[in-house]
Amino acid sequence: MKHESADIVTLGGGMASLSLIVALLLRGYRGRIIILEQLVTPNADKTWCFWGKGSVPRYLQPLIRQQWPQWSASHNGHEVSQSSRNGKNDYCCILAEDFYHFAFTLVEQNDNVSFFAGQSVIDAQEQAGEVRVRSRDYDIVAQHCLDTRYQPDSSEQGFYQCFAGLWLEADQALFDPSKVELMHNLECHGGTLQFDYVLPLSSHQALFERTFFSPQPLLVEDLTRETEQAIISRYGNIDINVQRREQGILPMIVTAPPVDTGCWHYAGTAGGHMRSATGYAFVSVQRWAQVVAVNLIDHQVWPDYQPIKNRYRWMDKIFLRVLAKKMDIAPALFMRLLEQTESDQFARFMTERASYRDLFAIIKAMPKRPFLNALY
Ligand SMILES: Cc1cc2nc3c(=O)[nH]c(=O)nc-3n(C[C@H](O)[C@H](O)[C@H](O)COP(=O)(O)OP(=O)(O)OC[C@H]3O[C@@H](n4cnc5c(N)ncnc54)[C@H](O)[C@@H]3O)c2cc1C
Image (cartoon, rainbow, N blue to C red; front, side, top):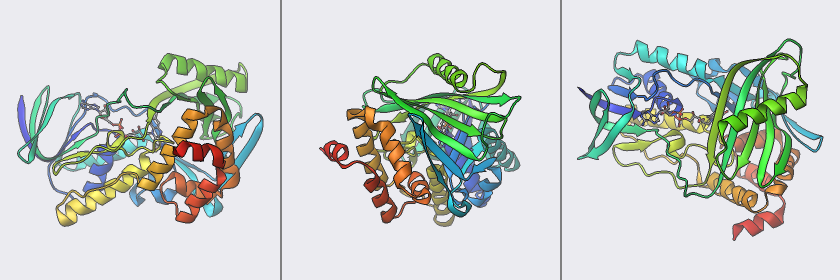
């Protein structure tokens, strides 16, 4: 067992931890950081999307692989689409492999950061204003602990956003690279909403995900089969190469975010950074990372931070209540949302940059009765 001391120890070395470490290092942080990660090699099978290049810090913008000026949803053969005005709110994607490469290159260049892979946290406790963390090979004492271990709470009521995605490469032009299909072929069966999410990198290459909003987590094997069937029913039984896979079972549950103490802090999915009605977390994590980095470096304090503002939490909660009561109207709700809001309003709402006017437009787009019923 090796004994170590640090200013910050992170429990988990995924998107949230690395986002903070990158933000700190790029502002010149020289404190000692230790990352404890249970996996031996990071899970890079993720694609992080968001609206608006300017929603993420400048240093991440070169990592954007692709941006799309248009996004759409469809239901019963009817399609509705939105186009970003003057490119400011294009839909953008960063591949996890590019993000990890960027973050780990920075970590290697800074001798104040150590990444300990294959080290599952066995015990972590706060003791007299410090934290003590143990893994198989390390016993670490630190001033601050950043906890990103997510533990689903099965007693909470809500939905799970479940999907298995396949990165497809076809030898013929199958996809329209100018447009992301956010929710194609929306349909509702037995209290579960289903749709296809298609992210085309070119006319020959796309990420295809059959996605479910389900009251229970679904099995990955079933999700993969559903995605394969959706691909066949959409494109026929043609020759398509599967390059990579990614999958997710994201909680769509509104819970109060865990409370930080002076030295114990939470982030990422574990810290309530994920929007419960959408599953998006990348932008809110980057925003938080900036605030923490500035405060730690300039003022030597870890700031109190509310990951998702109350107004979004409240709106997501009401929306999820409507889905719980009347899932069959969900396709119509999503179609109305795109039909009756302006693209920039929708993009700002999805990335927590909405003005009150934007929020009013979102509320106005929704049918009144089911939302009023969901209030009580
Ligand atoms: C496939 C997929 C696609 C997504 N797409 C988007 C998207 O397009 N846009 C968006 O905004 N959000 C998206 N999300 C949601 C969210 O941004 C991601 O889940 C994001 O990775 C969350 O960051 P995190 O740091 O909380 O978790 P992770 O990135 O999963 O990091 C947590 C780390 O902690 C480690 N860990 C856990 N327990 C322990 C332990 N006991 N000891 C040591 N290490 C431990 C894990 O191995 C992991 O590496 C997506 C999620 C998934 C799964």
